[in-house]
Amino acid sequence: MESTLSPHDALASLIWQIELGATEAIGDAPVNRYELPEKAAKTAVAPKAEPPRAAVAAPALVAGPDPAAAAQAAAAAAMDLEALRAALGAYPHCELKRGARNLVFSDGNPAARVMIIGEAPGRDEDQQGKPFVGRAGQLLDRMLAAIGLMRGAEAPQEAVYITNVLPWRPPQNRDPNAEEIAMMRPFVARHVALVNPAAVVLMGNISCEAGLGQRGITRLRGRWAEAYGKPALPMFHPAYLLRTPAAKREAWADLLALKARLREMGA
Image (tube, rainbow, N blue to C red):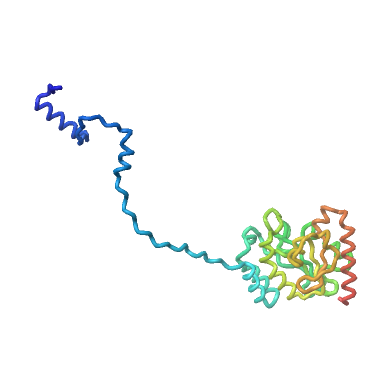
């Protein structure tokens, strides 16, 4: 079909299309756009392969300090109870200390022949910085008085010395986990070595786990064993006795067993 545009109008139209970006001429034959990808794939030039990159080694993970090993070293360096208390206070690997008010170290006479190891401080203990001062502690005092022992006694034969496996209160009074028990055990072992009691009383499951490596207080209680190199008697925790008064009968039998053993030792 012959164009009706004048040469001047045709040139102006061409310039207008170029300004719009139409820079390619349209062929005489129609183009099937659906065939273009296949055609392009056949005629495409494969990209030049890049040389393989050298493998980059992943950075090695640097292991942090072993909390139990650090505890062992710190505890072994303590030559007396004050140094042990300071070592516990400076120990950086137990997160419990961040949420506790006070470090609960001990109470009673260090010269006592009986050392009682509880589990962990509760709210009252955390506030006062002493072990067994709440309702459970008051019951413990009455239990000990029944066999002639008191935490405030000056005579070693009548005194007791009290501590816990953990010196810091766990949040919401939860049970300590295995990692926390493991990192505190070297301090407890050193504590026993420095006090050097004639007998150790393990009160509750956590104390038995730390001292004997096993739980099951209803099975373990009343049976003498060895913990930290000392004769050890597992007993019900006073807090358990407050919840289960019927177990006081077994607790009384264990107290009599402790008294008899001390008599045999001449302590």
